[in-house]
Image (spheres, rainbow, N blue to C red):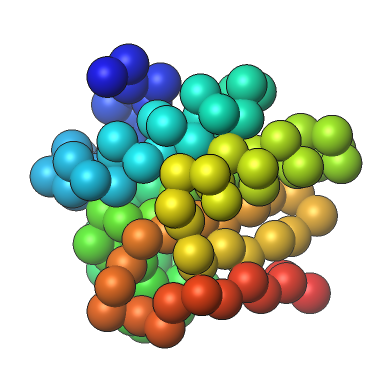
Length: 120
């Protein structure tokens, strides 16, 4: 499997060094599959978050980012958004949030599945 994501992308951005993504091989494999199916880059705004950083950025208290099971993919154009969504669906992601600036995708089975939401 080709890993399209750097350690820096997988690690909490507060500087604490927490990287839970590498401990979730099923998530990472699905994410790399999605990236290959999409055929466009998946620039990661955020993957793992520690509790302190999650609170600082206004993340949900039970966010999948806290378990290394989520990604926010930078995306601002409609063609890339379509390709990214195609890849995510093809790789089996069933929890997706869409904003004008990013797409959130996660595989956290402790949260409700088969959902797509829009950020306002």
